[in-house]
Length: 139
Ligand code: 5GP
View 1 (cartoon, protein in one colour):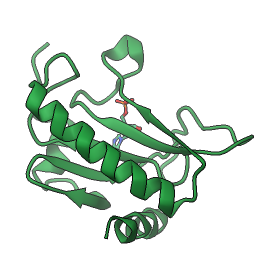
View 2: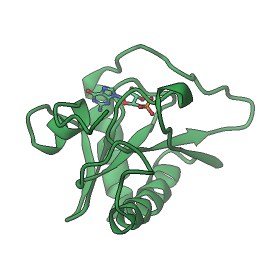
View 3: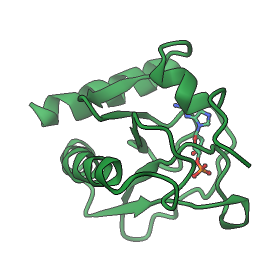
View 4: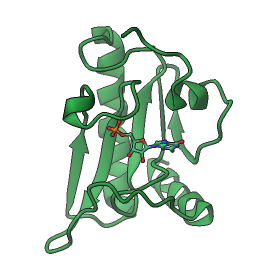
């Protein structure tokens, strides 16, 4: 199946759908996951279209992982997380549900289970506050 430009992250990139933005540069955008697996769950997407790691040009992938590292530091600091999971799923059998490549950044803590799929929409006011906390750590 070819890349579908009507996917939700493409719509967020075009400004058609709102998001709680954490960071943006020429190549990438980072924003809060709407159904967080843990507080601070942030997504990083390339502006270049590509469904998965196999389809995205290497240069765009490099820019995306650079942003992921930078934002993950800020997420770690903002949520005082001793651990941070970075995840990236390729294909429906791997659990991918949005077919525009993205990295998940999820704070992790000893003895605290992560919700694999919460299915619950977070309170927008809470997401806005979390995005502000992460932006403050990005400086
Ligand atoms: P995947 O399973 O494809 O790796 O992850 C897709 C992620 O996108 C899920 O964690 C889901 O909560 C998130 N998501 C789906 N729709 C939206 C949306 O409209 N806005 C935001 N910010 N996140 C979304």
